[in-house]
Image 1 (cartoon, rainbow over the protein chains, first blue to last red):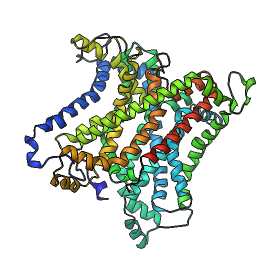
Image 2 (image 1 turned 120 degrees about the vertical axis):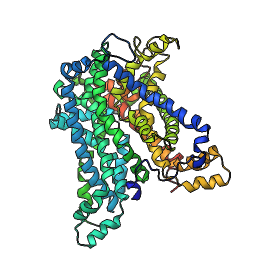
Image 3 (image 1 turned 180 degrees about the vertical axis):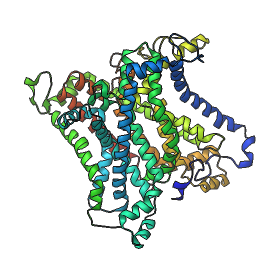
Image 4 (image 1 turned 45 degrees about the vertical axis):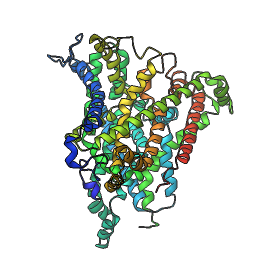
Length: 294
Length: 291
């Protein structure tokens, strides 16, 4: 539990290959071993982002690598002209809806797996793992039939339901690992003191799970925000388009309008990349506290 | 807390319901369709045909085998390269240095980007008029060449690199998390025994990471096998079906030619292959035997 409270920047153990501290700054191999590959990898990661940003901010037809003055015409084109403002709103509703449902159901199921022993538990766990082999793309036909029957085509609710169903199994497994890391003794002590199990959970366990909720919730958000196939197949009316669907049309239709494509890309990227930059350390520390081992 | 109450069942009920409707029923339904002739555009021919779809797939459809071979190539290349680069990256950002928190956030960030957006970004980089190769050629480096995505000789490496950009952080995150659980005294003991840096990596780090590596490569292999977003939007399976994976082939059969029966048979084949491969892999790697 102390691990879940430690900041990710403080490694649990001393870094494995770090030389003794006093030698650190005089070791010339550190540059070849650490700084050089890091810089090369950073370039590989960041040049594509920069390339997109340049196209988004550069007036059409120019080729300057550092555009100045910058223009917002492409953002105006995609946001107001092509309708990315509406797509953004749709994506946000779906992603927030999925975040709530996945987090709540994963918390319930994760708690059940971690704190109870019940008949069928192993089968349930096995079923959760097996779902990882089910390809979403190959399920499109029967899912389409289900959606049509249930009247969920072209509805944002339908997409929340589908995204939730496909993300829940892994989120639940992750969450059960997080719950297991909270000592059960704390909860039992509260119950001895007269709390009901439910109260004990809300008063003792839930506050300890804050990093877990942030990690699981954010990944549900990112997954739903990025889902392409379901949105493409089940929401074909333009007023229900999500950002990935809008982008895929931009890829085809505006094949020469790289400015618009790039601006649309920036709109789609900014929320998730920011969310992820903030939460990645919760994920690393949560996983390292034992969730990987289940 | 052993208990015989209804509480755990109530807690997993929503998950069970969603899984039954959206995962179990569709699989069963695909199984049923795979034994039928079912084409939306020719409904008068629809009906039960037994294993005819599977016979056609195995003996009369070169594209099935071609897509399967490409899928295997794709999975091996992606998972292998992502694992090696992800491990190197995890080892680097596990060191102590100034700005480490920022470096981590930056190198992990492509993981949050969708397949479609990754395509959008790399189309900007690869485009033959204002792309990155043209820029390099202007500076006298290399040859501007033609469209890397249209040329059969370069389309595979170009697609692999694009997916690497987004996929390496997955391994880096998982392996970094596991690196942080290695007790420091193991390294001290190894150092005292005279083990160099490489020796410590081989005899302490790698064995400790084994289960995490097995699990992450397996999950990733399945996800990369099933990956449709990126290839569909980047190459569409072309040029000349050269980058058509099995799921992409299924999607085209089902969505474009409305051949649900045959598409379902292809789906079942993919599902069985994945399941078989996963069990074999877990057996061979003796997953979990360390604990």
